[in-house]
Each structure stands twice: as C-alpha cells, then as structure tokens.
Length: 332
Image (tube, rainbow, N blue to C red; front, top):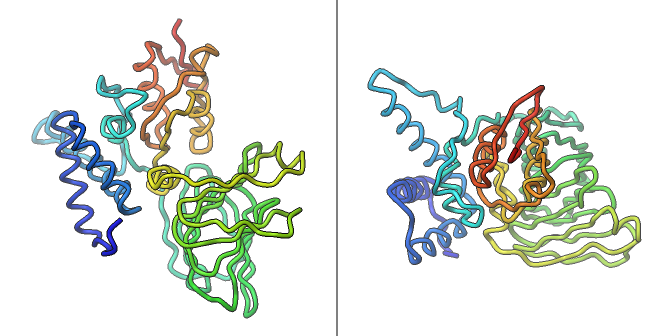
C-alpha cells in the first residue's frame, strides 16, 4: 500500500477509468490483478468504483431511452441478470450488478445532541460525530448507548453493527462493549457487529485494539486486517473468542455496507437471503434446500433484494415469484 494518501478526486478519476474499462469487456489476467490491487490500496476505492458504476449504468439507461429521458440517481432500478455474472467471479459480478447502487439514507449529523441513545431503523445508515472528536457510522437496525465525560469514553453496542473512527486520547481509552466482548482503543478504526443468533465480530481496519472476553484476564491484541469472532455456542461453552488475520479485500467487503452494498464471497443463497432481511422487509425464500446451499459471490445493493433474487435465479437456472411480501426462488 502506498505511503502517500491519494486524494478523493484522484480515486474518483481512477474509479471512472476502471468502470469504463470493465464496461467494455472482461479483464485479462494482468488487468484483473491490477484492478484487485487498486481496490485493496485504499478503503475508499470500493465505494468510488461502485459510484462510478452506478453513474455509468444510469447514463446507459438514459441513452437507451432517448434524448428526452433524464435519470434520477436516487432511485436505482432493479438489477437485471447478466450473462457475465458468475458465482465465483467477485469483481466481474460487481461490475455486472452494482448498477443498482445506493438508495439508502446516509445521514451526517453536525452537532452532538448529548443524547446518549442513538439508533437506526431497518434500511438506514447514519454517520455522526461523537463529543470527543471520534465518529461512528451505524449500519441498519443498530442501537448504541454512550457515556462520555472527563474520565471515560464508553459506547455500548446494544444491537447491530457500527464503524468507529477513534480520535486519539491516551488518557481516556475508547471502549466499545458488545455482549461478552469489550473493545479498547486509543486511536484507530474498527467495526463491531452484534446481531442476535450470530457471532459477535470485531474487524480492525487501522491501528491496534485490545479485545477482552468477560471470562478472560488477558486481552487479545488485534491489529490491522485482523478479525475476532465469538459465536453463541462458544459463549455457552465458555470458550474464548477466535482471532485470525484476513485479507485487505475481506476488510473492504466487511465494510461495503457503508456504501449501501452487500458483498458476498462464497456465501450460500440461504446466508445471502438472511443478510438481506436486515435491510428490507421484502423477504427472500429459497424453496429447495439443494438450491439454498448453492454459493454465490458478488456485490449487490442492500436495498434491492429483488435485483439480487433475479440475478441469483438467472445464475442457477431458477425462477422468482413474488407473493405476499416474499420473493420465492425455485427451480420448479
């Protein structure tokens, strides 16, 4: 990774170039490697590329509908299936399907209101400053409680997922409490996820944090591009959390929700359908168990379960029927 931080405008220019190149046809091996390296070089690249694809797709639709047509990028159309999509080609899948990009609301709230309780509803993403100069981005259906004073900086993640960009203050370590885990940082960037029935997860994007399990006397030292998970079964059995190193690309995928996107890498259709339920009331049902176990890779708009359902059905020779608030994917 370059030691010189690229400006946002240069990243946007590069994203536009990549979007146009991929739109012209599949990348060869060298180009694909260069594109993957660019995506991993800066956490802003994935979002910039998604925005460039969305603009390109909207322009294509406007040209197809005639000179009198004007598009509204705030109202993405459902993604159509594309023969270039393949469940094992993540970035080609992204180029084929990211046209339905972001319609989620991203709110930046200028003042801190001193209200210790902050939450988002389903489908909402909210970014706001904290009173110490840190910031937090709340994912869908997320709630936090805060305690900030002259001696402490404490956030309780009641439910959901949040990204914390922590201002340095060695005298007041920043703490995030999530069930059995407490994450302690001085100045860094990390996410914490706490969803009922799933593992509590910590991903470090920058810097170093300490993760302390409620039953452990010694914290885990977790550095950039590392992940810690504590599954419900591990809690019941009294086991310690699991720590492992992940790729920068995996970190970028874990953070794609900030752009209103869901990124899947070898997820089953059943797992992907469950993830969409966090963002939309339109439920995806995979009828046959054999189809539900099929794996898929790609980048999808979180607020567009219908686009995902049609794309998945096209890949696996299935069909989609909508009835009573459900999208039913089946082969029969």
